[in-house]
Image (tube, rainbow, N blue to C red; front, side, top):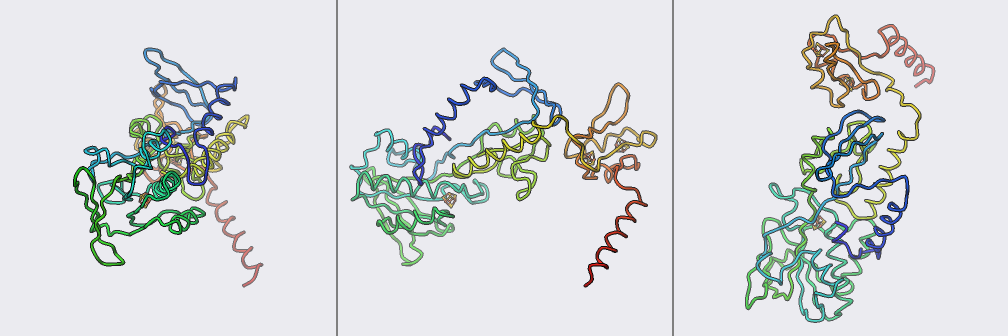
Length: 385
Ligand code: SF4
Ligand code: SF4
Ligand code: SF4
């Protein structure tokens, strides 16, 4: 979405920021950039991935210790509220572009209506909050009023998602005279066109009355949707998608930028829609997580890993399918199931799935387990009530 961003609510210059980063990357002799390139396939595990890239007819094989997925996202399209049938109906990013590049004349506008949550937060549509479009509405309202202080702006919303310090911009917009009216999702605004102008009718939930506003410009907050490559890329990388089509993290609180697959990390809209400041923090976190692996001379296996009792194993491969970390594979030369100790997380799923008791966790034995229990009980007794 970099091309769509010209300014942010809190005054960042996203284009300048990205240009600076791109230049630093181009000038770094240790970074290779492959543009117009697709990932053909990838195999291996953390510390020793091997990926084949397609660049037209050319195939490039690279070896890498970690993978960071930063596919980005895009503004969702819509056919609602007359979008596509009138030049007076635009999305937030089109208004931003028009104001920045001068193709939208704010001085010629008397009334602008913005509708929030268009095609969002509903089953069947993008059933999530994109977290950026309320801020986009405020920043565009701000820019419109800077260019034309007389313009009347009405924002129709379900909830204003201006969390954290962004709340102050919402308060300021109200103080500046931007009108906010909430609508009920069961009774959405309706748009018809009169003399080429969009006329928006909505039920004001406070006045409990129907309001009609004739607008010179209708601006729609359509939210963010995942990059269309996600399904295919997820299958190639062996990482899961959420029901909304973004990539799934391993654990939202403790491993928020890790994928379940060891050595694969997420940054930005690949993971979920979020403001640029959060994207930058997440990208730094992903880089640092990757660095933890890359900086080590050797990787140690999890304390508890799984093993295979060859004599009990029926080679049914149930455990290979069951393992969520792809730590198990079938050795076709020796006809046996093998476990990659560096990838195994010791989750025990294979041990549960194996019908023959041939998959087992190499943890403490029964005697050691009893000793652990005894030691912890001794600890709690000596600590007293
Ligand atoms: S950020 Fe605002 S407009 Fe966008 S989906 Fe969330 S509540 Fe709706
Ligand atoms: S599920 Fe058990 S028996 Fe089947 S291949 Fe795996 S270890 Fe062997
Ligand atoms: S314990 Fe078994 S299922 Fe879990 S990661 Fe290791 S091999 Fe895979």
